[in-house]
Image 1 (cartoon, rainbow, N blue to C red):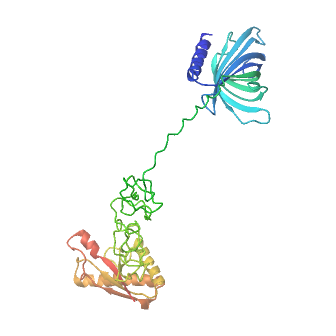
Image 2 (image 1 turned 90 degrees about the horizontal axis):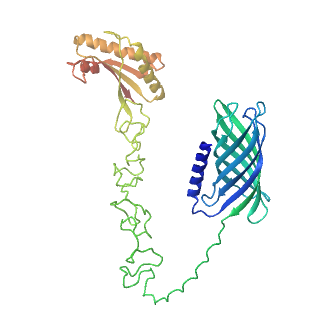
Image 3 (image 1 turned 180 degrees about the vertical axis):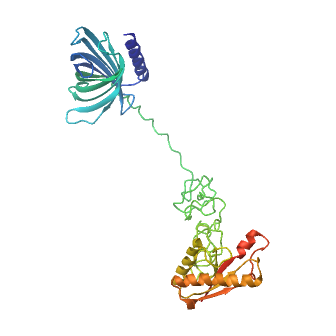
Amino acid sequence: MRKLGFFMSTVTAAVLASTATAGDYEVTAIVGGVIPEGNLEMNKQGTIGAAVQFNAIFESIKPELELLYSPDVVYKKAGGETTITRVMLNGVHEYGPLGTAIPYMKAGLGYENMTKLKYDNEDSVMADAGLGFKFPIAEEVALKLEALYMLKYNDDRWDNNLAVLAGVNVAFGASEPAAEPAPEPAPAVADAPADSDNDGVADDADKCPGTAAGVSVDANGCALDSDSDGVVDGTDKCPDTPAGATVDAMGCQLDGDHDGVVDASDKCPDTPKGASVDELGCAVDSDGDGVSDLKDNCPNTPEGFKVDMVGCPVVKTLKIRYETASAVIAKESEGKVVEFAEFLKESPAYNVKILGHTDSRGSDKYNQGLSEARANSVRTLLIANGISEDRIIAEGKGESQPIADNGTKEGRAANRRIEVWLLK
C-alpha cells in the first residue's frame, strides 16, 4: 500500500504543479465493472472511482488523473477477497461532435495495487487505452460512457482487464473574459510636413527629391538598390547579383561572349558564337579529342586517336603484345585488332597504313624483318575480320623511329609498337 501511496502522491503533485495557473477542468464520478482475463481465478469486479481532466494545458491532448477502486473482489477457487486500486495518468483527445455526442480517445500509464496477493498476482505498473462518448445534458454537465482496456505485466504473463464505465462529468473554472478597456481618444494630428514626390520621406530629409511614383525608397528618400550593384530595384532584372560583380544597365552580370555563362565564372571568355559550352563557359568537346564540337568534322572519334586540326582521326598506337621474338599476336591482344576492324567497318571513307616498330636490340636487318612481319600479322587479322585487303598497307620501320630511350626497359617497351595511320 505504501507503493501505491507514493505513486499517487507523485502523479498528483506533477499534474497539480503543471496546472496551478490553468483555467478549466472537469471532474467525473465513475461507476462500472471490470472483466478480468489474465488475472487467475478472479471474479468479475464492480468498481467506483473518479477522474479529473485538465483542459487548459494543451489544446489537443488533455491530461487526466483517474482512480478506480474495486472492493471485495473474490478469488474463485481458493476463496478470500482482495481490494484492487488502480490509478492512471492519461492523455485525452476529444473529437468534434458526432450528433449529440462528443467522442474521445485516451491512453496512458498507471499502477495496480492489491491488498491480498494470490495465484502469482503482483502489484505492478500497467498501460491503458480507452474509447468513450460524452453526452452533454446541461451547460456544464455531461454523461460519459467509456470502455477502458488495461494491460499489466505480471512476472511471466500478461494480465488483461476490460473496464466498462459510466459517469457524471461536471466542468469547473470557466471564467468570463475581461472587458476590453475603452480605447483612448486618438491624439490630434499635426499638419504633415511637405513630401513633394510622395515617397514617404519629407522634403527636408529627402536626398533624392525627384523619385518616380511607386518606387520603394530608403530612409533618405532614394530608390532602393538591394544588391548594391548600382541599378535600383525598380529597374534591376537580376536583384540578387553577388557583391562586386560587373553588371549591365539591367543589373545583370556581363556575359561578353554571350555563351550563357557570366564573365565572373567564364573560364573561356572568348568562346566563338554558337558554340555549346559547359558550366565553365568552355566549348564542349564531346569525344575528348582536343577539338571543340564547333570545329570538329569528326565528332565521334574513338578514344586513343590523334586527330588533325578539324578533329578527324589520323594515327593511333595499338598496344599489341606478340609472342617472344615472334610476329604471332598474343591471344590477349587480338581483341584490340578486332575492335579496330569494327571501326574501319563503320568508317568506309578511310584506308589504313600499318607501321611496325621495334626497339634497338638486335641487328638492323633483323629488326626490319621483325617489324614488317608484325605489321603484316595485324593486316592479316584485319582481313580475317572483314576488312578488304585493298584498304590496308603494311610496312615495317624497324628500329629507325624510336619514341623513347632505348637505354631503359620502359623506353624499349614504348618503342615496340604498331601504329595505324588513317588515309582518306
